[in-house]
Every structure is written in C-alpha cells, then in structure tokens.
Length: 89
Image (cartoon, rainbow, N blue to C red):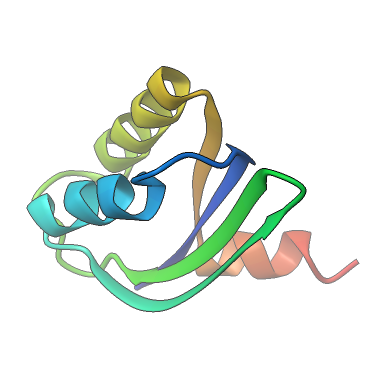
C-alpha cells in the first residue's frame, strides 16, 4: 500500500531527518521524495510504502501530525487512492 506525506512550513534544519526517523521506526519505507525551499518556506511530498507498518495507519498519522505541531509544520499523510482523487481536479 502506498501513501503520500505532505509537509509545508518554515524551513529549519532536520525536517527530512526527523520525518525519516519516525518512518524508519515504524517500518515505513520511503519510495520517492521531492522537496524544495521557496523563500524560506519548506515543501515536501514523500511517497511511502505503508504495507507493513508496526503501527496502525491512524497511529502513524497521529505521530506525524504531532511532530508537525511541535515543529510548526503542516504534516499530513494520505493513502494513495485518496491523494490521487483529491489531485485529479
């Protein structure tokens, strides 16, 4: 199962490392990553494999959301089918 993680917020050191650590601890593999910084704003989209995580999808979502709140970022995870439907329009 593939999912997409989106991250938006002020650029700071360690955003990718922190999210990657959360994913690695939950056995979620990063399949693709695209990130950019525009005028001090960090944006990233990750495609990840959520077929065999150590936790439920909702628990993973909560972990990422909590990290985002603490770091002043918007961090969301969506299953591939939902992400694709939202971005078809």
